[in-house]
Length: 427
Image 1 (cartoon, rainbow, N blue to C red):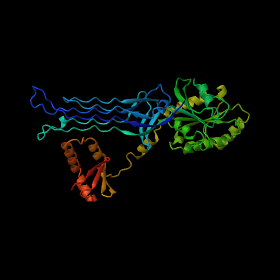
Image 2: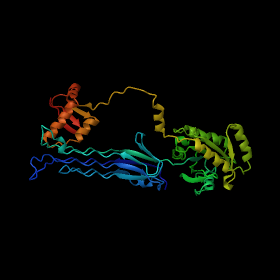
Image 3: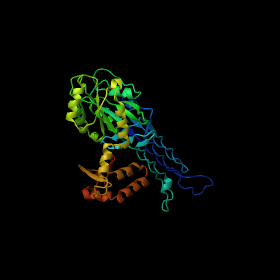
Image 4: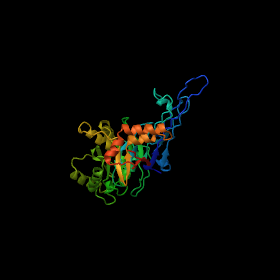
């Protein structure tokens, strides 16, 4: 089974907690604090495995979790780091967040990308020793690792992609010029999954060719195999457009060429910018010569290669032209990369620094404080001692949270919510 799109939930490991400990040994006077730090949480890492060709393994493993870091130990000993979870994926895998932002584009053998980073380990009480507090009874908790939903897509890695309506001879061409053995039959949509083949040109050059499922009108809007097909041509640098010039099933080759190019142009990844080789196939049929004449009249500037793939006639010039174009055609970046390149060095704007927290009035004397810095400090605090409470209160004061609450209208005795925990505001 060929699986090329999977939705997953990834959760990195939480950092280990730091501990409170003191040296109490017979011959070590004034041993002092010795609580060790917690270990780092494990990360979720995707790695390219050239032996894989589908995302089938991920279909049955919808939640990927990495190991938590270990707690710190006495004598300033560091807790064990959580073990990373490494997920093997085929080359050509694209990992996105739910909002569409690209996390990783994995194309090279053994390439790795951290998809969800593990949490940081908490500090032990050894770090909080000072001249005014020689025996701190305070340690930090480890922070949480990244956790979110992702979408994993496989986009076939091929240099040359074959496009055209169903049953125009794409699979036959691939089987003749390579050792690939795609299913070939006399009915539409015989090919329902991409097939790859390594093509060896007579002069020694070689490239990877992809036989992709047939297009129909409206494919860019999701009709037929639609986006399932178009997604796989995004990485191809050269397109071979095959037309059934014999029109054995009653189609018009001139109209077919227009429709397919319209679908390529309608897709978001600028597929029409790729060089295209037009192949007039099935030239052994009776109507082929007439249709070819009409085609050249309709598109006089288009170079057409005449072939009969079933008997391997006329294919060498096509392969030579494909190899020549590959030598001068660069790789095409993914969509978000294109946007980054277009905006780089062009747009300059002033952005205010992000606020460390935000205060929301929930009504009825209830207020909520939200913000990455506040929540990180809260999650790292172990509220089990007066020292810990005072340390967190000082952090709030340094960030000017108290005054911001007063300015927002918070009154003495109101309830303040941080990370689903309620506090009473005392003015």
